[in-house]
Length: 215
Image (cartoon, rainbow, N blue to C red; front, side, top):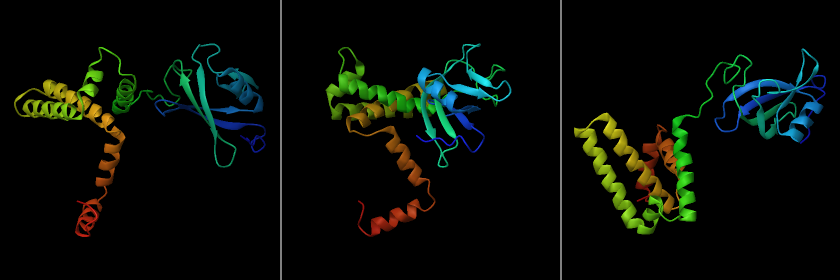
């Protein structure tokens, strides 16, 4: 990777991003020495323009920025540094220098959950309920999704919100297992729904059906 340190008198901006949440945590500056130290130590190091010295984020607070990767922009003069923070990033004690809370949206757990289910599918550990579902076969898995869907409908029409969330979560979990058994991902469903969100989707679908290119 070639970094152009000359445009700003030996410095380049370094945008710090949480590798997991994708939230921007802070902006700092690196010179070549700071960049090299970051690579060598695995802890993000900057050049302080006010103190005119190197400083490793967290060297006094313990809130280090553990390096995951560094990418450079199209002009070779700005770095995107992905990290795992070990605490608040801002010196004021907030997660980010903009006062934002650095948390993953809860929805992202669905992808993580399917990653876990895929691991179960690969390893098939004894005593695991998920393993049992895979061993029961596709028909049983599909049947289980149907059973959980029925229980979800019952709670939606005659139950409580709390029980509805519980049963819908069961249904979604079993659907993830079914998708995994077919080599599919929850992201495939998201992509399909994204396509349908296009205002022209239904028109295109009807044209394709009329042309005989879909069932």
